[in-house]
Length: 108
Image (tube, rainbow, N blue to C red; front, side, top):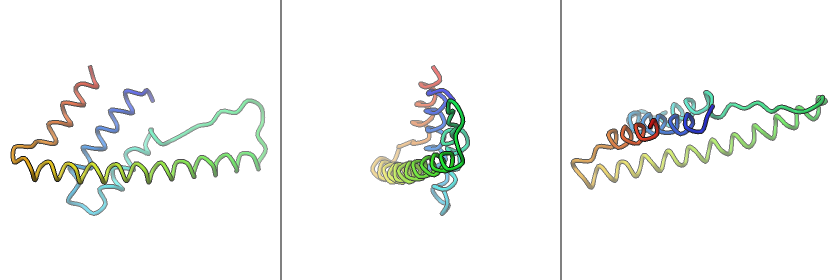
C-alpha cells in the first residue's frame, strides 16, 4: 500500500469516526478499517528462520501493532472531541465537508 493510499485510508477512518460517533463501538469500527491493509504486515527474511526466531518476530510485531493501535485509538478519540467542540462553537461548522476537501486534495 502506497503512502497516499494510507493517508486516504486515514481520512476515511476520520470520516467513519465522525459519522459513527453515535455508536458505542465507533473506535473499534474505525480501527478495524485501518487493520485491513494498513496495519497488516509481512516481514521478509533472507535465509531461513527457525521456529523460535519466527515466534519472537511475530510476538514483537504483534506488540508494536497493539501499541500503535491504542495510540491511533487515542488520536481518533481526540479527533472526535475536537470535531464536537468545533461544531458546538460554530453553528455553520461542516466537519464532513472539511474531511471531503482534504480527501480531494490528497487525490490531486
